[in-house]
Image 1 (tube, rainbow, N blue to C red):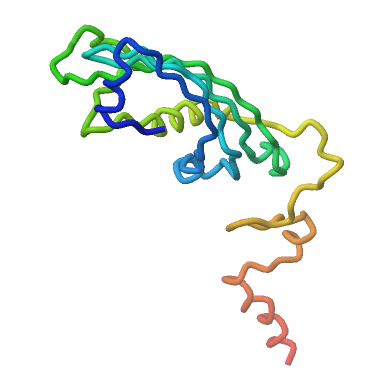
Image 2 (cartoon, rainbow, N blue to C red):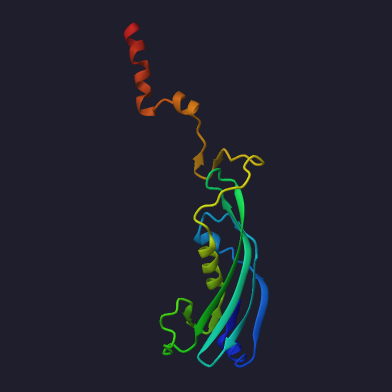
Length: 172
């Protein structure tokens, strides 16, 4: 989803439409809670003038997140409609307060960072699995392990392990 400025300006007063699946797996590097993401369906069109290009986007897809209670995988579908404005001229200041305003740096208009940003904004803070009986919670993961009460009560603090034999020496 990348166009050169020359390609974009060829669509001046002509419709620029697009519809494709995009690999947005870069969001997994930005947010480690996202376990996987399917290719994202992006559909839209752009209105191009001499100073700017206004993109009207629909972004749909599914990401897999951990359940907040059990850490099992939960599929989370998302759908976003957004309007993004890319300014070609750095001195053009008509839309100075817009959140969806992007100044083009270099010679390309790249929608992938914008798409990834909207996916990250759609990720919920907390999600829970609807039915946890069909797949039990994992016993361990990267950097953690489930511990039961029995494991905690039978465990001896390694700093105090030498004291366990202290009274045995007095009996001898």
